[in-house]
Length: 211
Ligand code: ADP
Ligand code: ZN
Image (tube, rainbow, N blue to C red; front, side, top):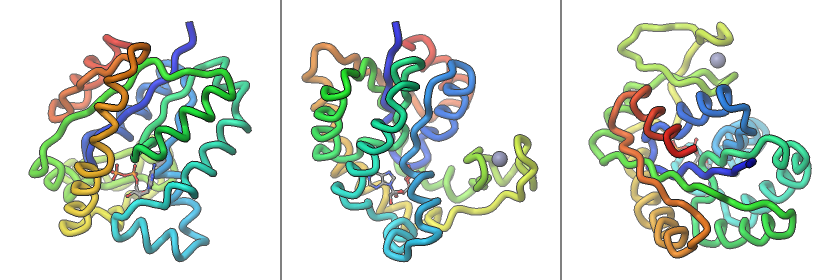
């Protein structure tokens, strides 16, 4: 049976890293709102401002983007399943998404909650380097300069700075965490906790046990 998944977790909990591995190995469609907005921000100063300060893009704009994306990719979604990475992030987004999914005849089967505490989030993100082409993440301490997938020079993400990470973490606690209860109350959706502080392969194994 084709299944659809959501990855929820604070900044640095490994959503992007795991989503990349999961979608490559299991041929799911990967939708990362973060990377879509980062690309759009190259030509949109308002968006750039929001992202670099760690604030959320307004719900209406996010829901609009998702609804278009789902409609444009509905055949693939139904064929392979989708992995939502970084969306929904607020209750309004979740409720609107549910309407869109009902309309398109698709359902969410599993919601993974990746856990990570504040100190770990800060430590990980301050030492992170990213590939802006494919979204791969690297540890600065590994001294890798070019992406091993696409040979692109790695860089630091502009929102990976202490005060901004703090803001992103607080927004997660306040606006995104209520989604856990929202999905917990839906009997047809499995909510699974994943210990995001473990290493990449361990986290991957925790997730794939429930795919
Ligand atoms: P994080 O590491 O903080 O989880 P993401 O790459 O998922 O980062 O997102 C980066 C930024 O893109 C967010 O801080 C926010 O500004 C914007 N963004 C991504 N997804 C959403 C969303 N679903 N709703 C609102 N803003 C979003
Ligand atoms: Zn790359």
